[in-house]
Image (cartoon, rainbow, N blue to C red):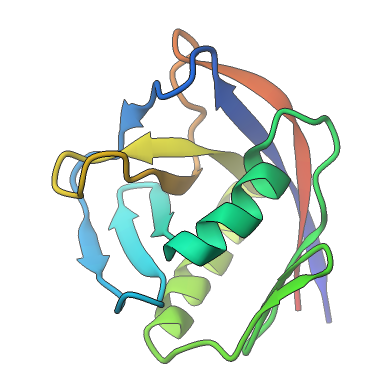
Length: 147
């Protein structure tokens, strides 16, 4: 059985601007793995550089349409791009993301930062709350399908 959610995507008014992710627990991945951040009402992803380059424009680019994000137990697909096989550390993160989407009926997607990570690191953030309207503008919806 699959379930689809619509989330709102946001982009900063000015390049490089971000709000802070805040207090969190983390599961840090190896160089080629995803790092997961778990905060109150939000989940963050720090992607390996090669994934970041491939996905950033597709997911958070300023175009109105974004590709469908499909999440199942062993892979994530964004448009024609597929990330698999998932590492063991990704499975609890995906389950928490699934719970956040189910509890909010969707949610919000935007970039954040945190001072603990190297300068320039951006965190793809799924949140139950919208980001600060002083920094971000809504750029359009994104469909997420959970299988």
